[in-house]
Length: 249
Image (cartoon, rainbow, N blue to C red; front, side, top):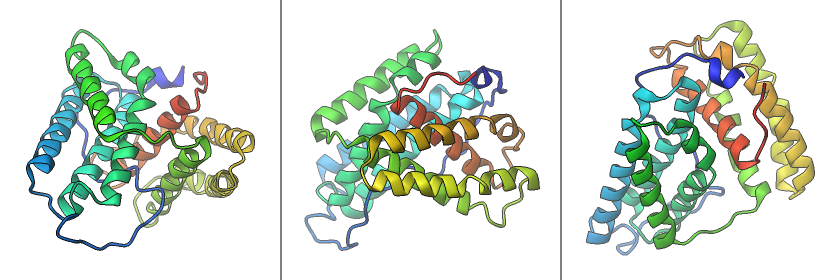
C-alpha cells in the first residue's frame, strides 16, 4: 500500500490553522469576549498545550504519511489557542474553532490505532482522554457530512493556491494545479448539500491525491512548500477516515 511505503521523518515544522471556521464572523472584540487571561481561559490553554505536546512526542515514531495527520491535528489546536488569545472563551469564533478541533479528533480514531505502539501508547491514550474531555466540556455540534467535506476541500484549494511562486518541481506543481477544477466541483456540490454526489467527487479526488504521495515525499523539509504539501496530505488523509474510505492500494 502506498500509505505504508513512504519514508519517515523525525521532525515536523508547526504552522498555523488548518481547519478554519466554516464561515467568517465579524472581527469585533468586547470586554466579555476578549477576556483571554481569565482562569477558565488559562486552564483551557494549558489543556490545549498539553494536548499539542503529547502529539509532538509521538512524531519521531511516526511515518511521514501519518505525520501529515498529526500536522493537521496540531494546527487545529494552534487555531483554538490563537482564538482564545484574541477573542476569549465566549466568542463565536473560539466556539467554532473548538468544534473544528473536536471534529478532527472524532474522525481520527483509525489514525490513532495505526500509529499506536509501545512508544506512543501512553501519550495517545492521554491525548484521547483530553480530547474527550474537551468534547464533553464544550459540547459537540454534529456537522453535516457535506459541511465538513466543503470545509476540508476549501482548505485544500487555498493551500494549492498558496503554492504560487513557491519552488516545486514543475511536473508536481502542474499536477496539483490540475486538481483545482475538481476541488471546485466538490465545494460547489457540497454547498448544495448533495451528499452522494459530494462523496463521489471527493472520493475520486482523494485517489488522485494519494497517487501524488511518492512525489510529495521528495520535498525537503527546508523547502518553503514542505508545510503546504504536508498539510494537503494531512487533509486528504483526514477526509479518507471521515468518509470511511477503504485503504488505497
